Image 1 (tube, rainbow, N blue to C red):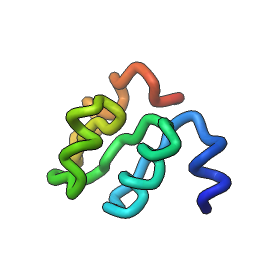
Image 2: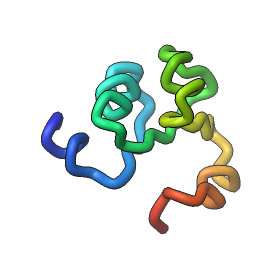
Image 3: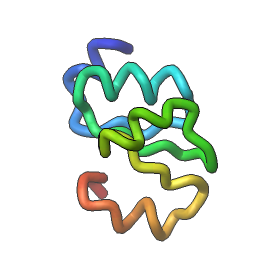
Length: 65
């Protein structure tokens, strides 16, 4: 899983651990939860919180559709 995160273009997750891991690899993260455990990843702009808002998810610039 770490290899996938490290070499991915973006990580979509609802896992707190994945938020932190992907951010440490400088891979953009989209958190599919209403709350992110790692506030520092949000402040560093490496993690965007989409929650359950599908429209917001679909309009994010770095999420491939």
